[in-house]
Image 1 (tube, rainbow, N blue to C red):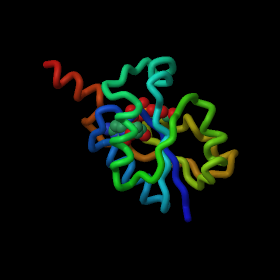
Image 2 (tube, rainbow, N blue to C red):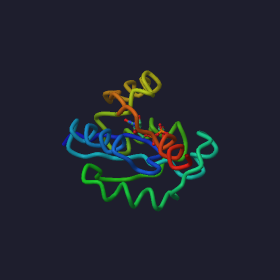
Image 3 (cartoon, helix red, strand yellow):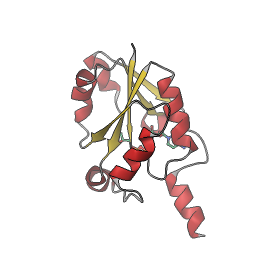
Image 4 (cartoon, rainbow, N blue to C red):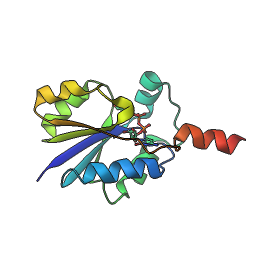
Length: 130
Ligand code: C2G
C-alpha cells in the first residue's frame, strides 16, 4: 500500500487542482491532502480564501482521488506528517520545485509535477471581476 501526500489551499477548486490530485493518486494507493487552514493561508501565504476551511475540506473529500484530508497549520508539520501517515511519496506542483527536497531525509520520495497551464484561482477571480 503506497501512501502519497500533497498540500495546498485548494480554494475555488478547479481542474488544475483535480489534475494534480489525479496524478498524485496515480503514484500510490492512498492519497492524503494537507489542506491549508484559513489562519495558515492568511498568516503564511497572505491568501484570503473565498471558501472556509470546512467548505474546502468538504469539496476535497468529494474528489474520488482523495482518501484523507488533514489540516495544514504550519510549514514544518510536513516532517512529522510523513511519519504519522506513513507516507512513501510527497507530491507538489512544480511551482514549488526544490522547496521541499529536505523531506527525502525523512525517507520519502519527493515529486514535483508540472502545473496545469492557464488556470489559477487568482485568474478565476480576475476574470470574474472584469
Ligand atoms: N496546481 C496545479 N496547476 C494549477 C494550479 C495549482 O498543478 N493550475 C497545484 C499546485 O502546484 C499545488 C496544488 O495544485 O501543488 C494546490 O495549489 P494551491 O491551492 O495554490 O496551493 P498553494 O497555495 O501552492 O499551497 O505547503 C504547501 C502549500 O500549502 C501549497
